[in-house]
Length: 87
Image (tube, rainbow, N blue to C red; front, side, top):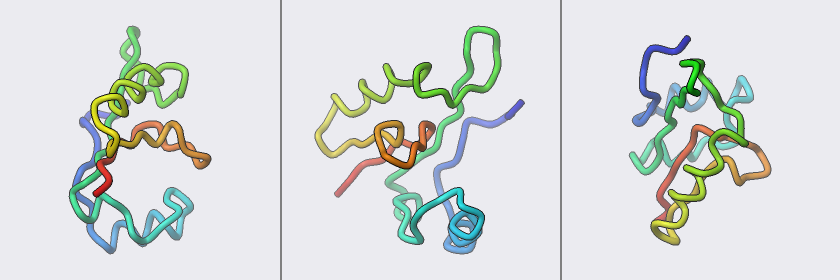
């Protein structure tokens, strides 16, 4: 089980590792600009979940707050823990 809240800041070196391993599709991540965060969510049983069906409500809520907000769960390349602000 994950014991942290997620990931906000990311170095270029870490982003390259994610890109090379397939965890990311871009070297130009919003994490590098502090405009994105990956959050860990837990279900009622206390288990870490990244299932879209479990997180859709919070992704929808995030996007409803501002038209510059974007949730990775609505992308073609699913990234359900990812929330970002576009500039």
